[in-house]
Image (tube, rainbow, N blue to C red; front, side, top):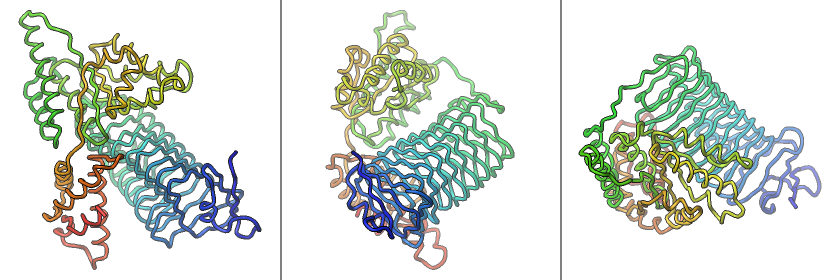
Length: 549
């Protein structure tokens, strides 16, 4: 039975503060808050609670504090009918776990109003977000944001990064100092029936290997283009409109990677069915440029060599054995599986094995339906959309976790996938990815899976030296200079954290780099006046030391 705790400072027997109620609350408790203004900050580390207004207006005001108003790591936090006002820290900060916000008003002055770092699950509906530098920052998480308005932020309305999969539906993003929606570093937004207006740069920017689906969305009154897709970014633009934007309204760095059905037509580049040797070599060079992964690179090269030789044998009239292009990528998070899968798809296209080589990344939630029969339908649609390229199923073992007896929907998705791979064996390459042990359990979930996936490529964890090099490359790519004395500190740090069970490999390297930049920003803000360019570029030893502490 759910326990309800009442917060009412002037009522005998009730809790005087929200923080006091949280300390006493058992997991899954509901904390009902009487109307009033509560000037406090609350840490809900690894707790599962619901904070809800009893009746009337409930305001949690921490505008004078330097800490997040509500901060949680793990657990599950539900917010209903609350007004949360932050100062120079987030109104809500979530590090892993789950967040659900309904009918809330969230505001801030500096930094993100809502900050989520994953892995996490987020649901935001019928909320208002205003002020702050960024409205929502969603990193390495799965999120659904519906019927929500983000306005008056000094930079970006929503940032989707580090592989976050986010659905934005029936939302408004207005009066943003930079962009309305910004996805980068493998962000995966789906933008449906939204409105973006009044931005000083692009309305929607998809960058740095991200992919996006935009449909039935209006973008107007932007100082930059309506929609921008950067290099190596995939997506679709369906039935969208733009008014009073910079030209070109739809700016595509690589038009062949983006499907457009809208008023503005983008001509795709000419393609050829003949393998392009230069393209193959450049893609292999891109693979070789990745840090570490020696065994992975050898495996991919051997596959490409076999495909090439088969094509020569076919042209010479010699028999060719069947070769499956479906693969299992086994290894921990942050080991380059997604990046290698993208390159592999482009290689198959360059060799003429696949007509497009486009990359479609999905997870369990994209395949599993809500009722019997719906799952097979969803899986078929996802497979059809990936036809001609690579279907990448991340954490595929989630379809068969904990045995199939209590998860008929996951098993239905697996069974549908097996049949589709057989019926369309030469039309798409399916790559399933996840932890090594769990992927073996996944293959055992259906007798046909092992015969479809005959090749497993193992991705080993990065070494401390390799992770240090990854950080150094991130530093250079973002036009920073790293103090030469920082390398030993980075190596020692990665040697220590790599032993943890939840070690994230390159994801941890990215987080460390972000923390170092944050430390630099805090250091420079304490200076008088604008720093010199050399100071703005340099991450000092102290910044790195702060990031690893």
